[in-house]
Amino acid sequence: MSLKHAILTLLETEEGSGYDLLKRFKARLGFFWNASHQQIYSQLKTLHSDGLIDCTLEPQKGKPDRKVYQMTQAGHDALIEWLENPVKVDKVNDAFLVKLYAGHLLDKPKLKAELAEHKEIHQRMLGTFLTLEQQYLALSETKKRPFELPYLTLRRGILGEQAWLEWAKEVEAFLN
Amino acid sequence: MSLKHAILTLLETEEGSGYDLLKRFKARLGFFWNASHQQIYSQLKTLHSDGLIDCTLEPQKGKPDRKVYQMTQAGHDALIEWLENPVKVDKVNDAFLVKLYAGHLLDKPKLKAELAEHKEIHQRMLGTFLTLEQQYLALSETKKRPFELPYLTLRRGILGEQAWLEWAKEVEAFLN
DNA sequence: TCTGGATATGCAATTATTTGCATATAAAAA
DNA sequence: TTTTTATATGCAAATAATTGCATATCCAGA
Image 1 (tube, rainbow over the protein chains, first blue to last red):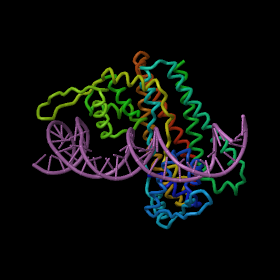
Image 2 (cartoon, each protein chain N blue to C red):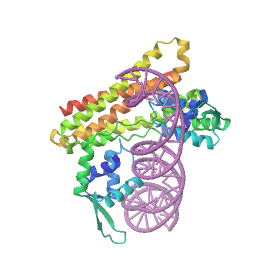
Image 3 (cartoon, rainbow over the protein chains, first blue to last red):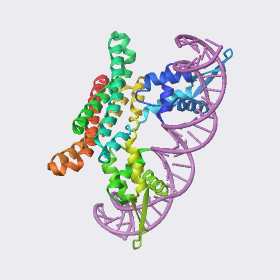
Image 4 (tube, helix red, strand yellow):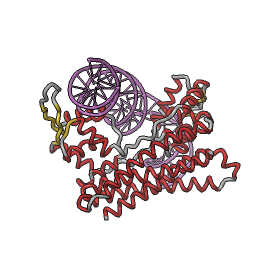
């Protein structure tokens, strides 16, 4: 599973509490891997009981202890091993396409309305990605360096969303 | 869940046995919804026990009975209801991007090799899609009509794969 | 001061998917 | 004639993901 290894990747860079990791996950990997907070907390528990990460308790006044997770050697090894073995090609399961395929059972206005909703979401995503890209491109060459690979994942998002929106135009043309 | 409704969509057009449906599923919906034969057989069972599909047994010599499934009114209603309510935007969970994000932990040749494997798969997919597109485009206008919506789902596949391959060029440029 | 939202954490049940196994026939290829 | 490939089905266990619920704090604004 990749979620485990995505979390290990984050911990490889820096330790953190569940919530820290959740936020870092959403901000950095969330564009190409969706995971709920429940999933992340429960994976942290599993990773810990498998010895791939350590956990230190930081007492807090009033609040319950803060659990800070950090990488172990076993975790590092597991991550490297995962990286060295091929992953499966992204599996697509797109409910909207199922619906479009069955679109003859629905009237065009309803299809159009739903297309418009999806389009808005994709446009918003693209906007977010383009903003992030501008931030990256504004950096000096040396400052870019550590973000080169993340930037490539961002490019995937940009090209993917642009392609989706191009396609949406074709669908709109048909529905009009 | 969309798998249920994808199967109902197939049955809306024509009845069939589990294996019939499996093949039709792979040929028509398989490009945007991946499901194993086990999943399809088990969903048929559930759909049947929920009364959304009927099942008639066709005795066969030597072989076990052929179970032929067909739509019920309840199934049709459930499909329409599903179609009328919005579906969620396609969720992306792309393990290769997780790996690329963590690529600094791996040497470039290994990343390049894996990229090449994925590229080959995407190229093959695109090839398949383009062949199907040629077949569609060769039809007369009247014969095209019933495949207009499926064709749009095919276009999604084409534009999606092209975008992936464009992106792969950027990644290759970086890795070289 | 009350209220709502962000912060911060998790359990439990259900649903969906994957993986491994299992069986049996028929046709085609070696 | 043996082996492989396609046809044709499915169960069971494990893993992954979703959904619903639950708790408790802190801070800002009405």
